[in-house]
Amino acid sequence: MTATLQEVPSSRLSEWLDRQIAQLLILPTVLILLGLSIFPMLISAYLALSKFSLAPGGYELRYVGFRNFRKLLFGSQQYHFLGTFGALSWFEWLLLLAAAAAVVFGFLRYLRRGRVGVVGILGRLIAASVALGLLLLLLITLNAPGFPGSLVVTLFYVLAGVAVQFALGLGLALLCAQQIRGRNFFRVVFFVPLMVTPVGIAYAFRMLADMGKGPFAPIWQLFGLAEFAWSADPWSARLVVLIGDTWQWTPFLFLILLAAIENQPREQVEAARIDGANAWQVFRDITWPAIAPVAATVVLIRLIEAFKIIDLPNILTNGGPGIATESMTLHAFIAWRTQDLGGSAAVGYMLLFVAVISCVSFFNFVVRPARRHEA
Image 1 (cartoon, helix red, strand yellow):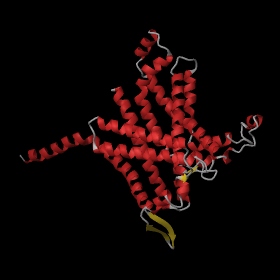
Image 2 (image 1 turned 90 degrees about the horizontal axis):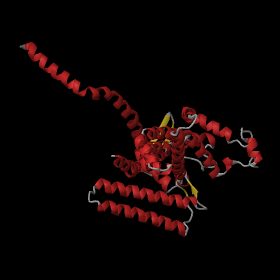
Image 3 (image 1 turned 90 degrees about the vertical axis):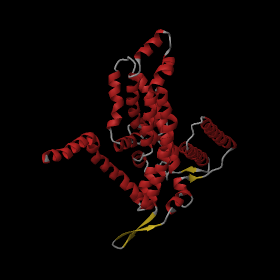
Image 4 (image 1 turned 180 degrees about the vertical axis):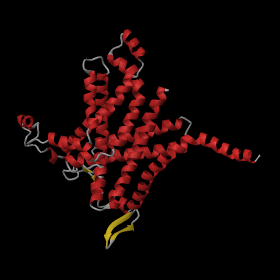
């Protein structure tokens, strides 16, 4: 009787372990990941609200509240983070008003659906406010005598870079999905940049862009560009950084999109071609609807990664000329290197805020509709 009573708890424990074995096996990994992500966020939040200074025998952290954030948005570091402001032309005012009208129209359309939640309203209000604020910032800093800060430069890298990389990746994927000679060779070649470290890519492009001694120096001399210092001009320096980033990340989008294209329903494509549909009609009516969910997801992943760009502007230009090519990540790194730990953490949290709002908005307004359309 005693043995039977002892077997009951052990059998229950065994059954419970069988039911929970999956969660128990991944629990150590989850705890490690949470520790490595949450602990630094908490420490950086404390640093963002503090002022770091060296002291005899160590250092001192003094609580200063939101002073680091005020310095970035309204104080001495405003030129570095937001930039210097110019005046808006009448056309830019009309563009801003048109964007505001589009936001209001979209919000009213959402309210007419009937299924309206508090979270949905707050999320759309935050996303609309951030989008209009960033558009206003772009307009007033890109106008003379305005000068963009690290926030606008980061948005340039993200928006322009991801758009160009997606267009190139999609074009190369459509090309390599065709029955052309040597397509396997081109697939391998297009994959090469993913195997090179970002630092290596930065140094390679620094050598290639050298107009005096680089491998393309004879070409620059032939076109009379040998004396042009691209690193001394803000927009040419940003363009070189963008080209290097595009070369690095286009293969990532190419591989994912190629896999999606090759997994589309072949029967529909063949039936459309038999019916006389041309290449554009096949892409518009069959290929794009089939790959749209994958395309939206891979662009979201690339957006998250694009906000963290630091290697290329750091090595190619060191953020120069001046602060013309400084991304927010490089801005935070330079502040940390000068022992302004509070300012560095504040820039990091501003980057987190902008990246989260942008990526969550993209997920809600692009990725989710694409998935619903697929279903």
